[in-house]
Length: 149
Image 1 (cartoon, rainbow, N blue to C red):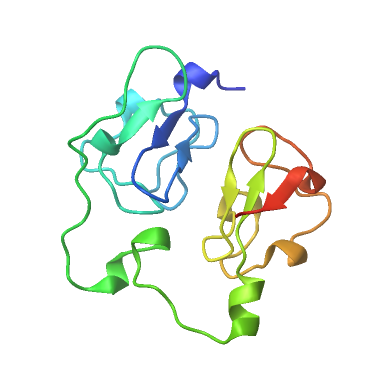
Image 2 (tube, one colour):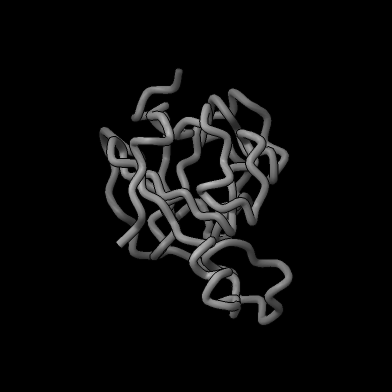
């Protein structure tokens, strides 16, 4: 299991993605076991598209970088998660897309993103996640999550 010093968190607003070397980045075709320092210079956050400069270690040496570079493309098809234009839908759809926060570590489950590394497809509401699903960061069970305020 990776130490917090080996995990890096994206600092862009409303993102918070954590790169865990034990998992790699399936979307970016980064194999498990790849340290953050060994990621290619052109690697981007799989959630918001921020560069490596947008990340800081979860623990140890490091601070929030102010020189974060977000994608500049005008087309939304290349963006995912919080970088995508806001989606409009019915009140029922919006209620189903409620974000949930882990009470232990602060991880935010975003239904629009899902948890593809753990076989939860994008668009899966929190209520529809299997009961045996656990927080991908700290391993807390589903009942340790609360709706995001």
